[in-house]
Image: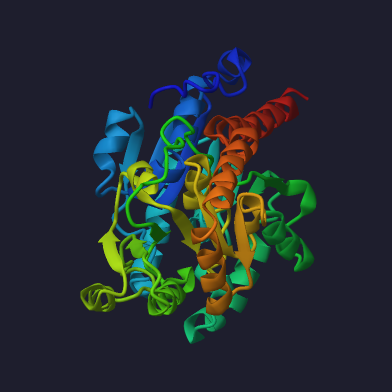
Length: 405
């Protein structure tokens, strides 16, 4: 990954880390290789530069080549998957993690997202790993969905988190203060063992402002195609605004996620596209180009986000945002500064906000400029990398100090 020309090259915690840590090993556990590349690869590269040895345990699939090209050592997992495959397979997944941890003997394990946090924390305890970093990028489907499956799972997950997270030598990273306050209030987390890092950061060189397209305005929703991400509300909004005769295109960007019970079926997405209601572009790996084509970025999600990466990218690209006023979303969208926040589940308010921005070219573009400034001040990728490596330094240095005593 090339250095960001707008910011200094990140060295983690400086040469001090490289000289004092002596290749302490960090093992990342994530379910999908593509997610690691999208959200955590800069941290791995920064940790290597700071003197750590890094290894990633994940399902190797479409992003395996990118990890190899980045020089990151990987361990392909056979049984550990996002979706449950039955009790026997889940037991095999846990045993697989225990075997990996015992073989690798990492100094720090960094678990990213709910299932890695639960399974990885158990495996770490069973295999004697000294330090655990648990990162929850939002509370996700189990805590946000109203489905029967989510409601049934929620109490069980709460009990497991309460038992697993408050490890004396563990730290919990959360992305927004709402999630932190919720876990503290319910006794799941200890305030002294939590850290706030707002999102995965954004590469401000790759995601940079360009003039809005001069052709028909384009309004987009970019996410996995899940009902809780607001796909249905976006389509309903498009129907309303098209019914008013508004000359605008509406596009869904992202893939249907078969491992998530809230996925919008591909057949439904294709049906909407055939009807001319919205366009469905599918998964795109060139989001910087997609955002340059967009006029407005929407995010009507009630999913339980951390800080949505696509909104960081939209703001960095100088695009105004319309989103539901939810934890995580409000961290990057400042109402009437770089976008508009509207009440969750209110399609009418969503449509009103999009219409208002489409009809106010000057105000919309001013919001885009303000969004870029917010990202430059608060959300650059190198900031997140430095904050995360500081956590590694804190726990590894603390352990060495304890041994010295």
